[in-house]
Length: 137
Image 1 (tube, rainbow, N blue to C red):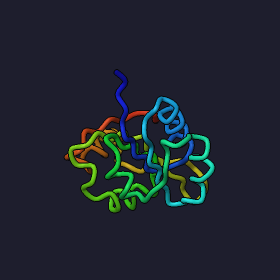
Image 2: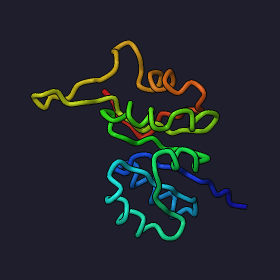
Image 3: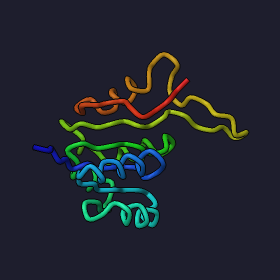
């Protein structure tokens, strides 16, 4: 018997879009959300009837599993919007705490003495958090 999950995706860039395609192809139900919903039409058209769009709140509520794959500069906004909707859920954190300074140089946006996973776990203490699909130096 094959398990099918409802997967909410917050962030529809390279990581969110690619994983959604794999998961939809495997038969899972996908609810995409984005700050740029116009980008979502072409993504879901390729995924068949088990993919749909909604708000960030709807994706967080819909998912048995929720993928957080937003640009780190919008993480605070996403977390405020999500609120406590990830409590007691599984969330996959695919964010990278990296930003660009005014000269275009990449920099770390969190303290040096903590890992990205630990930092996000502190912000989502009631969530079963998995840190994955990221690369940091």
